[in-house]
Length: 278
Image (cartoon, rainbow, N blue to C red; front, side, top):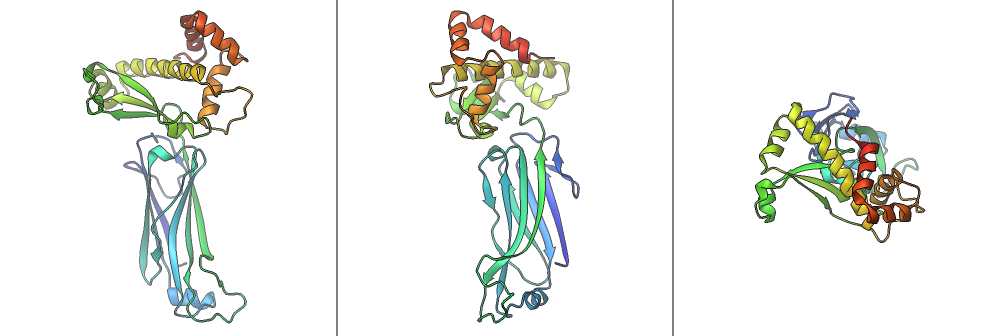
């Protein structure tokens, strides 16, 4: 490989060469990846002891530690000169650490290969380089997404503030894919918070938002017919997150459910004391 370089952008923010930490990532920031490379194809085939008629292909593979995502770019034929491979990774399908892998593999052998050391199977990888990006922004704590409630047919939508939306109640799925806190972009208070997140008013809204987010997660946990604190759910799964909320209030799910039926306000106040805005 003569040259190879990565260009990675988190939303509209590019990462510097070799940077591994995406500090300001959010759930609506897609990851844009470009891998540029230059390869002398004939020299590479000679070194691999492959015939001149053989073909190589370049691809980017992306995996997420917090979700089951595995996605790939379009496979590009390797030719002479400088080339690029592109991949966009949707923000709503990732969390944790994003692992990127650039590969060049055999697409076509051509004539019979005589050398016992040459790659002989389609898909054999002949070159590989990795890069990891840790998604450490606000997203892992509060999965917020601006949405127009009017477009979802909510009457008087400009008065609504937010909506905790679960896309799945399967306890084994990734929490980052299942839990969404939709912020109503039609509401003037929410609009101001999104436009100027550093203001004192925005800070107050965010603190209240975090408390209400946990309160609604508790409600979901206590109303689930399948949740069990004795089950070891995969880390970062929906079951793992909901179990963690219940454990803040007691060791027994039945105990917390009973206390919530008797006095939900007191249980929610206890939750505030555990996770309250600091």
